[in-house]
Image (cartoon, rainbow, N blue to C red):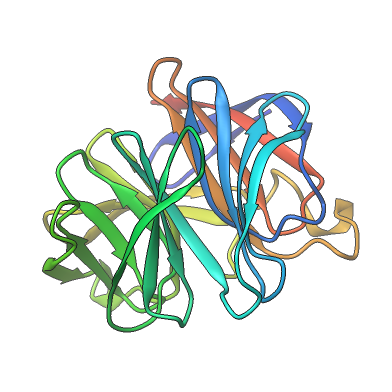
Length: 236
């Protein structure tokens, strides 16, 4: 199946794999052949290592019941996990999933990624902010606009080939952002990827983007979705 988007980017579905229907997906990373996933909701939030093809949870840590986990990013051998309204980010050793430290930030935490120099964070508004991964200080921010309009509800983030890709909460689409200008370069329309009439009643919104630069595969899923989709991106 190939779907054409307005900015002349297509995709082809390469595979579908099982995904934990109890996972309220908030953040997704692909590294070393496996997925790392942050799941949310109070009393159910977790950080987990997942086998790609089976969806089996190989390793996990549960967060305190009063913490609602959000976006996830990798920095070196660390995983950094946001929280929704607690104002803290948790830093883990990627191998052991042992928490190393934490740091504070203002406002809500939604999505998190890294451009190799800084962490990039969304908070549900039209703003993206840059955070120093060593000092954890906010180093700047930019408003994201689609044309002349601010684009709010920026959620899960992934840094791909110099762009920030973001789930927009409530939409079956991924927006591609120029992080230097704050402008939208285009959208990847995923409305026909997993139509709502095919989803179980328990499935929630699309959320979760991971990328494998070695194979240029894109992995996408959603909250409580039973499937994870592997996509090949096609540039016309």
